[in-house]
Length: 135
Image (cartoon, rainbow, N blue to C red):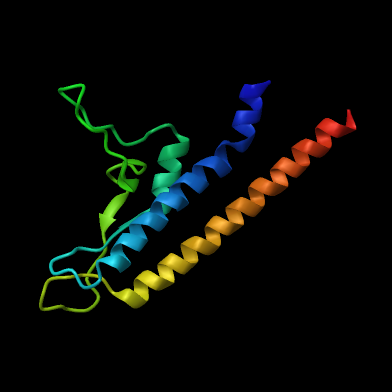
């Protein structure tokens, strides 16, 4: 029973995790807009989403000692093939590839899509709750 409920929410759960990790990635780009040599990163969301639903995820870092710290960055959520450097849209003397306007648009779009996924999840919960109460 619980496995079916888990499957029922898997698509929204996966989308929310990926959207959250992408939001962190975009925020890092914005935060490093003035960092010399910083290369803006983004993710191919559709391929990352497809890979996550297929069960393919990035491989965790291997540790050779039990005292090593585990990585907890947002890039660990995405498969390596989905995490890309953003192409340079305007040249910069210091080598920074962040276009703040582009990053803000992507950040806002991703936030809106995250909110939509939350709404879909809420509707699924309401539907499941109504089905349980009707029995």
